[in-house]
Amino acid sequence: MTTVLAFPSARLTPSAVPVAPVIIGIGTRVSTQLYDRGEGFVFAVHDDPRPGSLRPVLGGFAQTGGRQTYDIVFLSGAFTLRLPEAVLRGPGWRLLDTTGDAAEIAAAIAHAEAENARRATEKAAADEAHAASCTGCAMHPSMPV
Image 1 (cartoon, rainbow, N blue to C red):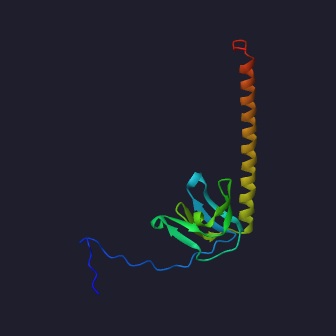
Image 2: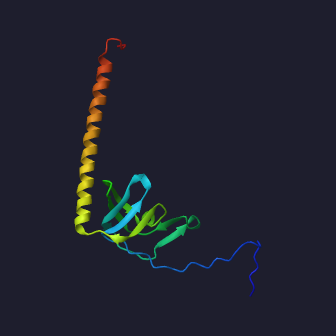
Image 3: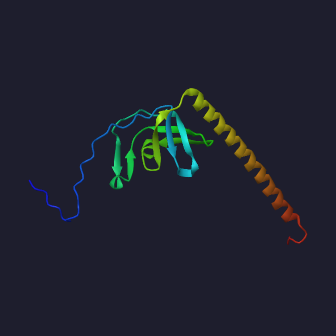
């Protein structure tokens, strides 16, 4: 059988060779530029794995399916909890070849918890300053009653 191309400059592309998906487990190193997170580690896996349950949609631009969700701690001091497998394997995320050991993951978690506490303290101070500012404005003699 002969293949006829509708466009003379078009080339036939070979079909993709199926590749077994990488198993994502605790210690898997991931990277994303979304929200300036950078590199991090998977530190918890939820639900049972089901290989081959992901399906491409939108012409392969995105994926749907998958049962697992992952908790990730980033070296930048942030957490992402319950990230769906389809998102982690989709665009914007990379699975890196290296893995982290327990000490690296524990240090990243401690750093992220300290950052969360620092951000909470800053937010509480900003909220108090805002409330004091609003109270001061309401008590000012030039404000109508």
